[in-house]
Image (cartoon, rainbow, N blue to C red; front, side):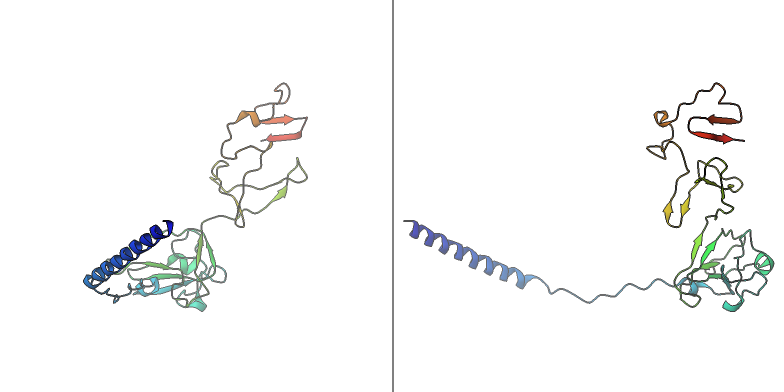
Length: 228
């Protein structure tokens, strides 16, 4: 009984499979052949190719603003439009179609604000070595400012301080050491550096004799936390 039913089931499955195969054959005969012919997208033009006028070369590491800027071996240190530019780099007047080529693999520190304008079909181009002809790899523009003049603080042997650039705010600093994001030193260490209003993480200091208009003293922990 079981054997007969199994045979009937297998026969029914074979009929179904044959029917599906025939159906698939009918469908495949009606489908058109796939068209595999296609055109590859055009490669985006290099920024270098858009320089129709004079090309000026900038090498932040080894350039000289007194040079001509017209060839790699006469590269400027600063780009026109940089407030720190001097000499020929500062007095250059860019025209529509001109371009600035930054040396590849070199980090350019500063900001560039171009006062002159290009024209339709003749833009002023800032190129980061797109054709690979000036340096190795791509150029890097870094708007950060390196903090120098670090010195040991007078209230801690392992604490160092420096002066911030004019206009910098302690609460808007974006500090990095190499590629590592840094935070302003605080004690006690907060649970969240971006949520400084959690007063439960603050030290409690007796204001009597320890707090003035210009200083905060904490005899139990540090000799002087803040002074002006």
